[in-house]
Image (cartoon, rainbow, N blue to C red; front, top):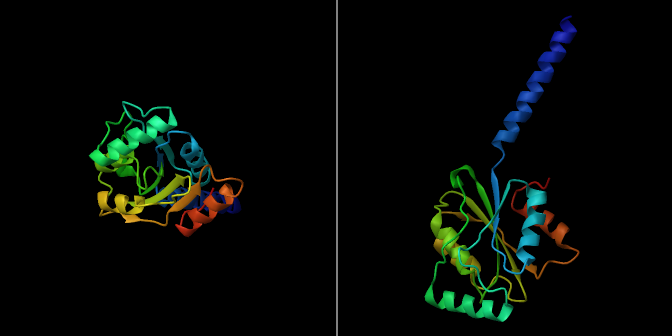
Length: 185
C-alpha cells in the first residue's frame, strides 16, 4: 500500500514538474507577410519546428498578384513611407515572448505591411528574430528598419533564405533556432 502511495505521489510530482516546465517555456509567435508564397512556406516550416502560434499579416488592399506591378507598388509605398491598413491583427500580443518575423526583401528593406505590423504593437522587452526570403539581396537594410521601429525589443540572429530555401532549409532552420536558444520540436 505504501509503495502504491509513493508511486502515485512520485507520478503526480513528475506531472506537476512537466506542466511547470511547459508553462515557463517562452511563448512564440511566428508571424509573416508573403506575396508569392516563399515566405509563407518558410514560416510554416519554422512553425513546425519552433511551435507556438502562426499568424499571417494581410493588408485590407492586397498588393498586385502581378510580380512587376507588385514591385512598383512596393517601391511607391517605400518612397512614401506608407503604412497600409492591415486586415489581420494579433488579439493578445502581450502573451508572446518571442516573435519570429518573416518577410520578403522588397527594395532592400522590409515591406510596408511589416512596418504597419511593427508600428501597431509595442514589442518592448520581447525578442524579435527575423527571417527574410530574397532573390539575392539578403537582408538589405531590413534589420536596421526593424530595430528602428522597435528600439526597445531585442533583435535575435536573423535567417536569410534565398527564394524558398531548397533542400537544406529544414537543417538551416533547426540550426538557426538553436543559435537563438529555441529548441526545435
